[in-house]
Length: 271
Image (cartoon, rainbow, N blue to C red):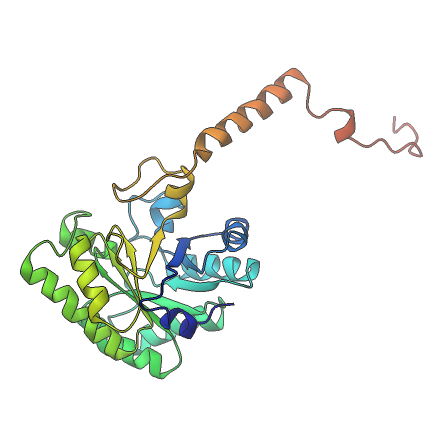
């Protein structure tokens, strides 16, 4: 299994880091078998699988339960728990306890924090305590109400410099990697060159050290996908066809057939 140090050493590596989200054991098992390096149990579960409009309603228990299911199903992939809205940042003690829970109870290998100035010292403290941190800058969906939507970040000189400055500070604080979401490709490339931990892009162009996407976007299960994503299958249509075929078989009596049932010959008539 890759460790956080294995991932950290892949800064500038010719082989990009591959990361996908997963929220349940069967999906995690397939992702691992496909050779993906890192599974992120993202708070994107909110809109991807839990039916919410965004990530804000996702609870600590939601993430802990689904992280544990992913960890139980995998052996050879790094599992990262995405800390949900207000589970960190307000109080240092609570933040440490909540992040530690993901390692102690849910068997995560690391946690991810949506970052800002408020998470620099927290990142340092967590790593001092043995809790590896994946940082996240650019579009941070937990700030959707403050940002006014899911818009590209770092699109002017001042905001791009702020992203670079925060990236450097979180690397110095001990983060082992950095997710850059929905930022201009040239900004992501410069951040990647400037820090000594690997960057993992999502909507950040080709010059990061790795890439991550949401699994439901990749598989074609989402109602809508962001413009920077790519759909590799149309499982929504496949699932609908299979479910319709099942319904038709039940309605026509073709299922269950003789091979799907068992008759116990030794049982006498019950009435």
